[in-house]
Image 1 (cartoon, rainbow, N blue to C red):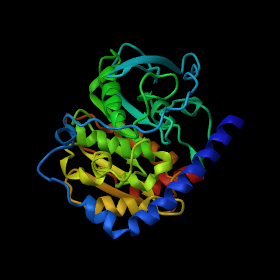
Image 2 (image 1 turned 90 degrees about the vertical axis):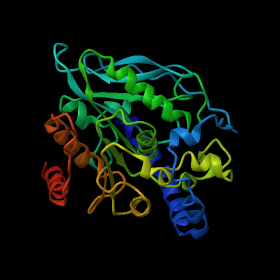
Image 3 (image 1 turned 60 degrees about the vertical axis):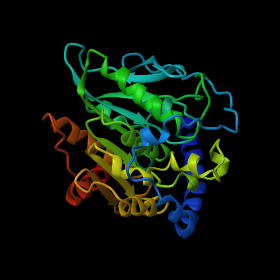
Image 4 (image 1 turned 45 degrees about the vertical axis):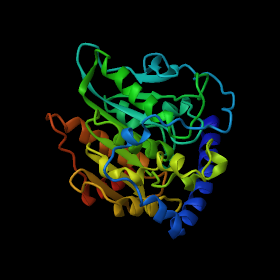
Length: 330
């Protein structure tokens, strides 16, 4: 628990820096105007084309992903364009059936995975995604290029998009996973990353993004390994430019209380997008962290009921309010 508490403090600290930058970024009208000048006739995959990102900083050395508890999860290697990357996959209830699966992408800038996936955490800051595997949903936690002892370099939500899609391909090949019921979810920078993945691919049944941003520059140059004054580098990493290309049911959540990226949620809701596919949910009474425990449980419950060929998910204010109340009663 001491390790987890320290991590929670560190994550709260860097998110506070992000939120300060976010406020400044959202108030910068010129910045928003440049981002709105996207070529609306192309997809993110087409825009990326032959573009080669220039990474200015080296990835710091990091430790291998620790081994998870036996019988709860297993550590695997999944193939990516830069080599084999570490991941955790929760053990299914049995290996004789196929189950829905969720890829959970952690927040932060390290691209690591660690004990956060299984250590107990307080409900006010539970970034584990444990609601999924505790509900019997196969859960994959991918580390990304440059994280842990992986090959490659951190690219600041560029090549990492490809890693997430590669993780999904690997997950779909597991015999205990229903390849037609793979979902993608992430928190904070992970939430931003899953929106970019949604713009790149329609291979997921639904997408769940918690606390993303629309303009990647709000994370600040100190957290990003590329030149944030380069509009092309920025544009290919900023979900606000590509919301209109998303073809998968997508649900975006953020708490309305400080600390929060709720201004970014409003920004994303204001840009061009498919209203029939993308829902925005400001969660009253929660912040950037405290929304996770109740809403991931709500999402897990909905996934278990989502058995038709086409995704039939929806979330009402009553659903969200009940999820918050239930967690507080417990």
